[in-house]
Amino acid sequence: MITYRWRHDVRYWVGLCLTASILALAGCDQMARQPRADAQEASQFFPDGKVNQAPPLGTVARGELAREAVLARRPPLTAALLARGEERYRINCMPCHGLAGDGLGTVVNRGFPQPPDFAEARLRQAPDRHFLEVIEHGYGVMYSYAARVAPADRWAIVAHIRSLQLARHAVAAALPLADRQALEAQP
Image 1 (cartoon, rainbow, N blue to C red):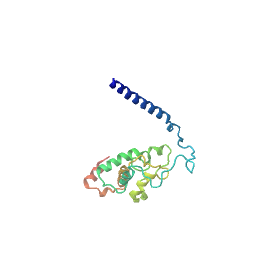
Image 2: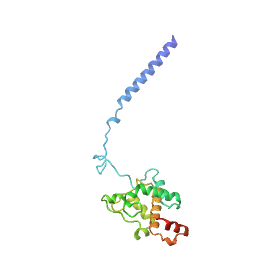
Image 3: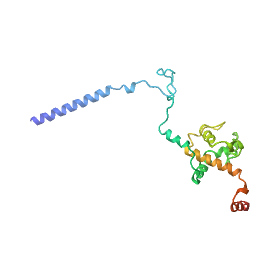
């Protein structure tokens, strides 16, 4: 009989505590009624009256420093880098700049302004950083491709642009004899 009463008392107290906990938690509905504002709404909380606040100066997204550190040094020029650069160039740059980098891409045929020819003396003499910054920030009517082209791919595109410039201004007499003969044999 004592055992039965003890079990009954434990069940009673556990049930009572559980019920009290549920009722206490049900009464704590402050999170559902706290003040909040949607993006682009006015706010009385911030001094400038805006909900969307700019991050403090010097704030960097997680992993962004490591991602951007790739831009600090030019990678070694390899066949793989050139192949990647050609692939990325065809995807991102060719519609405007054209296959040969002459600025005669398909969008120019549809009325968009013609970008400069990469073979211009000004661009042949420009440092590689110029092309990196144009890809990142845009130039003229070209918008930024920073969100579309990874930093490592930017170097690859610059390498491909340099190969296009070299190909357009290569002197046939400077080629090895076998290459020159193969070039002359083509129709």
